[in-house]
Length: 418
Image (cartoon, rainbow, N blue to C red):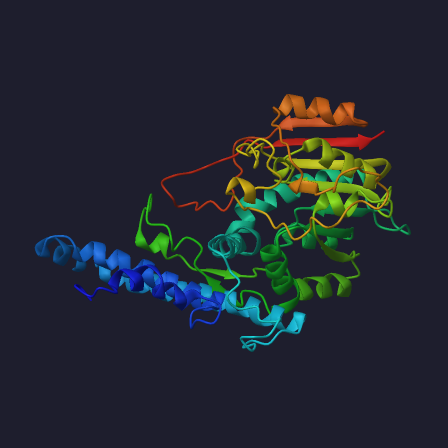
């Protein structure tokens, strides 16, 4: 199209119509496929941009980079198959058509923003952490053992009595929620991210058997890779089928608890009068540093815990809002959209406020040290029963074969509501 006087308009305007509301690539699944294809094409083009003798050397064994890119494409297709399963289940749950009319108010296609695509990618990777055998063993099971030990000491299951009721804010894909209910606790998860909610609904309610779907969580990573075998390593999810696990425990005469999930902002959902003093325990794992205002989180935990109730916490202090601009009401106003904001219309029913309570989207933020967190929790009506810094062995969606290893030294504490 060189020399065409309209070429500039086509490159800056008409090409975007492909992704417009009525365009052929409006759906999120179509975009996912196209973007993956573009990335694959870019890598091939970069390879071909080398001098001919060099790219031919890399295309031949033992490197075979072109074959590697083909294998990456195949792995991405498997990840897309899992994403499609989630979409199909949740379309049915919401009563939505897979191919809605373009002019329908219920047309869900073409709504995804680039940040939504990033969240979807991250959610697929999180299946490795929560629901693959290796990820659970390395990253989740050690935390679970610590939590179960705390519960045995401070909220034990008692024969002939109702199981303790637990809340897990930031429940994510629901693995800890499932494990605690499996062992007899009445456990409720709370999650703000619809990406996480849709995915957890699928894994908890939509899978048919263990190890049903293959995923390739680290296929996108081309840096710090020890071998292509590791980059293309296949994992199966879910490593445990939730329904079968509950059935086996019931058949063995072992107690099982109830498992529920609520959607929405933790502060807005549980600072209400209806939630006041309803829970025996709150378990927060890799959660409290998602607070722009930790005071609001502590107030909310205190509101929903019974007197004498126990708060168990494990996690780092990677404060998610440490770059929030002064006066910003949300991460989106900061150019960072790591949480859903479809919750700002809600407010605690018992609060008399002269402003609209936006929960996590409320303006203002601060960051504390671990010592200061301990002091703040204690000042706000809790007795600190236990506190320790765990060894630096907690990864978060960490490829154990990568040449780069990130580890957290998590703060672990147990507090009782006075």
